[in-house]
Image (cartoon, rainbow, N blue to C red; front, side):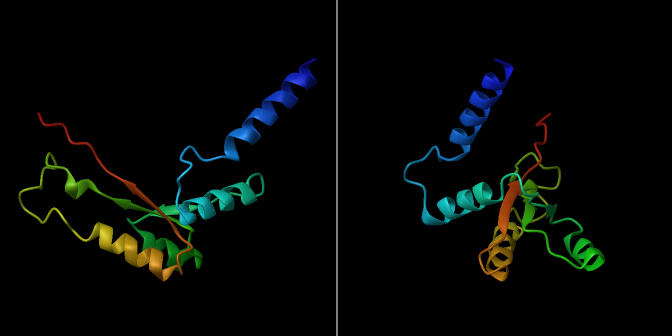
Length: 117
């Protein structure tokens, strides 16, 4: 009986990763999803944030497929929000990096929440 529950659980997990929640997903989204499915169970998608990215690449001599970009300067509660441009080029840098990877890289964004107090 334990094996049956395990098998049912695996079937449910497999069904969950085989479909997207948005039936109108773009072709690029579907391709990325398929990349995740094709690599499921075979390895890890490694990544690095923008901070120290170039240093990381020079040390390991490889480029991670995932790169995270920080959106902290877009927050109005950022302590230095009034002293520097809100658009610090993060989005343009992400677009450029994606293009530099021949549209194969996976871009992620993260941000910091600053308390308004």
